[in-house]
Image (cartoon, rainbow, N blue to C red):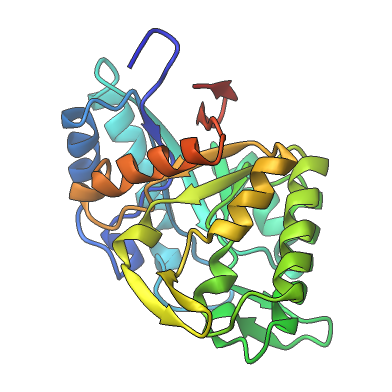
Length: 268
């Protein structure tokens, strides 16, 4: 890929999250076979005091980290491996994020905001948004999370468009909030390849991928926000596949050059 162009993926799940296949080592071997220079693990993080489903059990967190440490040693001459988690931002979990980064040896956290908390305390999953007003609330939660400085990137930041609503002014507002927060707090946004694997879906305003959404990324290109491509792989065969190739190709069409080294911020 050239002397300064690393081949990397920092969005990797394994079977611990209960909706993926393969062990940590399966992904390492697939990454090496695909010629990756770096692989970051980011399984869906558990919370110590709540079970939000479809994520690693809290009792497996220590084993997860130990296994990655073992893989780092075993494959140190072949690939660079990183310890991470994909996790939602909840204001009451502030000390937990601190603990993960300072005491548990986590290299990075990805904000994957599948659910969020309203000011009145109600928990909302973005897939259940009844109207686009929720998108704005969702975006404000992302902005609050980025203000903490705990998150290296926001993954699938346009996932709010997964719901059956047409793009409207609230979508523009949500996009602006997320882009401005990413710029203000110098946080990377992820162009998520897994959206391609989900296929085309019919929406009120036409057929499209659930995400990435072209209007979000058209605005991201104008904003000059830093972007990375993430596989969001849930199977070792997806560490680098046609969806990843398509993601890089489509980003180029927007005029966006993604970074490839999330932790050292090296542009490709």
